[in-house]
Amino acid sequence: MYKISIEKEQINQLPVVSFDGQIIVVDSMATVNAAVSTLRRYPIVGFDTETRPSFRRGVLHKMALMQISAPDICFLFRLNKIGLPVKLKQYLEDPSCLKVGLSLHDDWNVLHRQHDVHPEGFIDVQTMVSQFHIADTSLQKLFAILFQQKISKSQQLSNWEAPTLTDAQQRYAATDAWACIKIFECLSGSIFNPDLSPYKTEILDEE
Image (cartoon, rainbow, N blue to C red; front, top):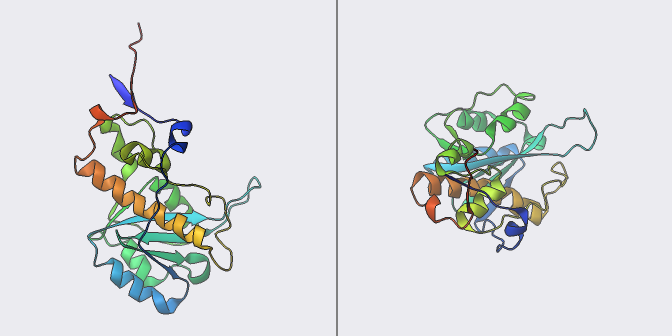
């Protein structure tokens, strides 16, 4: 019996990867419908969200950003500026549109504090990893195990409610959503062979 896991030191030695497609910031109602119409043309998209970090106990911020990525284009919906528009809400609730994320329960907890929305058509890749003996379920570790590449988390604790998102923030957000597609396709397409993973370690049977 074995498990697959990776240490932080091993991740730091890997080459950094990021989304290299088009990134479009959606911060006005005028651009929402076109963004959702574009996303509906794709059979699968990646999903993630960002919330301004709180450094005080008991202080909870609202979801600031929702990023939805196709393989070649990512839309960053600035919810702190536009709220949850009807067309976007309908897309999130459409079971015919396949959307892939990671640790979605956390996203829904934050989103439900603000909006009455009932997401459908979502797959959480964390539910897929156990059959591959993968013990690590964070996005960065999963991606490193599957692709031997590092996703930078340097912007994770930045201010997602800033008046303007920096290029680094935009790239970070897009990469996280795009990475969910890559992980899903790898695991669902039998591309990853756990027996051949360089991060495989034997589990000693307890006497």
